[in-house]
Length: 81
Image (cartoon, rainbow, N blue to C red; front, top):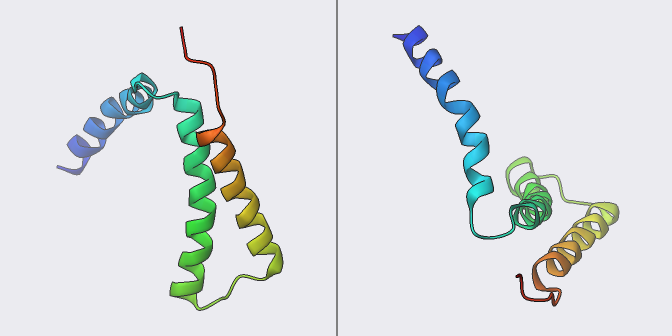
């Protein structure tokens, strides 16, 4: 049973890397914005679960990440095509 599951996962994995790139939104922008949000949520998770409050450097880095997300997502661009 276990080997069949592993074979199945190995067969599906390459396709799972390719499918997100077919989305209508610009995949690179969405992925970069996700990364910025992930950084902030990781700090909040560590604060909530581990009880370790972020220091000033953590907060400054998180603010830079959110500013980067805002630029990526909301900067005015020319219409495609």
